[in-house]
Image 1: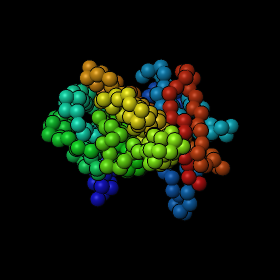
Image 2: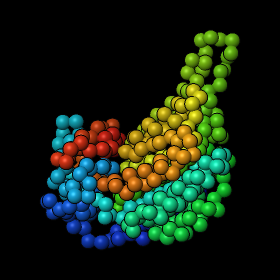
Image 3: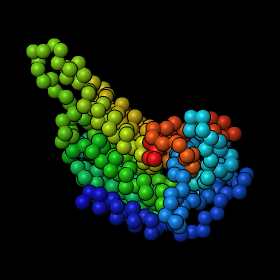
Image 4: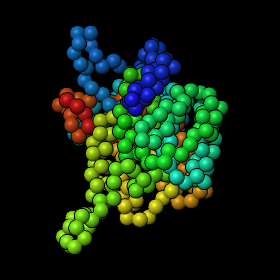
Length: 333
């Protein structure tokens, strides 16, 4: 059932956006205008070469040339072709995922900040609201109605349990085809106050034999956390939607530091970012910065050459100078 709700959201989203609009490639030298996405299936049923969608931030601002020909891409030493770029004028789907469980004063500050940030977004931004307790709940379908977003968020209760580890791959897996099948940009903004001891599953790796100094659970108390992060990273490398995380309550004990390091690693794996707030004053700044970064994101489509598959590293270059982009992918054969 948890997948069904998100899948319905994906279908509704596709209906809101101009998926059937004519696809026109950007001309060389064109300034920040998105081009469409080539289909991946031929009429005879054969597959085209696969492509990946790369979140990227190009220096040079709105005047930078982001036509496909302005990029150079390669996988290791194998050159690759950039086929399209979805720039700032392309519709953006912002999936705001709420994982609030305990800190009321912090979550109220976060609610106020995200409402203001959403009100300030550009007209082409569609915002959806998801609640992430033990399973995802779609509270608001993608919409430009900023008042509806604020009203829905205002009635959101605490969930009682943390959900990031349990749901981050589910959300990525369902939002991924939305961006692949429609000429849009998409991103997940995850707001959480979670701590590692608040999951139903026990990640604390308790000491099994307190009398045995060689007990590995004593030496590696964060082993279960690292194992979970490794599993999730492998899953997320197969998806394309970047995940941005604002954690409202930084904690400095050993297990929560391992947990927070894991969150940072997972966000980076998708091309997203993470920030951990150490005070209530940092929350609105962090949320505003994240929403601005998401709006500034371009999506670069790169064709994968024959023979390139599995875990691969992408190099992406642009004449404006160093660019920030996602570099790691797991490409199916």
